[in-house]
Image (tube, rainbow, N blue to C red):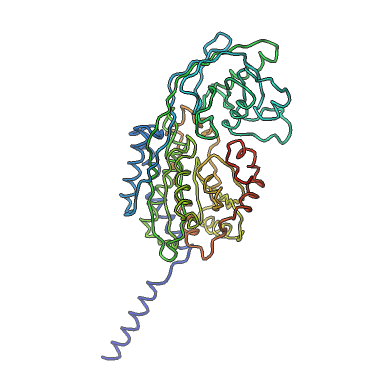
Length: 482
């Protein structure tokens, strides 16, 4: 009898040890993959939000509803630590606009942070790409005139010409004495684009509008032929002190709780449509990544904060507020990585900005993901740009991460336009963002040693220079190394 009891005890112990065997990372990835493929909710929640809320403009009633919607979803998914981070700011919204060029009423959209009221009339002058070189080629050309600017880089431009953001082109026009700016889109079919024309988030002193590509080319040809083109721009807008809220769900780390990985994307959108692509596909994928962490009982070593940023479209307002608060209370050094998803989807790799100590980490993680699904191509880059919520973190030296997307290029024609609606969203693509994003985030939060460390001021400066970011940062007044 005693022998039977001993054998039973040994068998029970072996069984328990076997059941408690620690999962390997590939095994965890496989489990994540199966669950997300079967139960992903990113597509459905985005569809619900776009149909019941509409656009998500910061400071609007819709924006507030979107904040409450995502807060409730985090709670529904099992998060107990969910909070609003409120900030107060001046928020811009459009009123009426009328643009007449050559005596003809032209369809136009006001660019963000244009004046509260404007009525200007003047000659239209073609300044090409609207870069410093274009004005330097003909000094004084735009003084007292309305500048016609192409949104992109014109065919036939000098080799190596590097484009700037619409806000930076507007700042250059103002600097060169323009009394108005007419930017024409690079998308066929008369599609109009909105977005901020301010590098600082403050009101600009001159009106700025966007017109269709075809109309812009027509005006260029008239001016080239020597025809004098007159334009009148009339508009009213609003700039009000508003309150908005970042939504933050926190999953506390099991071993290194003071070290934080932030994954965020902007929840807000412009008001011409529902912002399903910019940035519904990013923010609602993050919401599903958060769900996957709770549903799959994933235990990160480091604390993860899932953040829905507001105010990105009007000048990175929410992310800038979060960083300022972290600098103020000293917690900025606890933020070890910022993973930003903005208009990204269907990942085929990652872009890791910052000074990497371990260049193999993301490659190894990518090989494990690709072993599950070859849709993931394990591509890698180490660079960065501006104008999304990673920027204020990056300027403080925080390593940043984003996905390399493989989305249908046709969707980008609706960037900031009235066609950015849910019918552009591909269900498989947003699901791929959720499953691969969950794997990448889990690996990063559980790394024995992070692949990059916070950069000191001089290293951050050099990273900005190496990525050709000094000029746009100087234009915006954000270059802090003089």
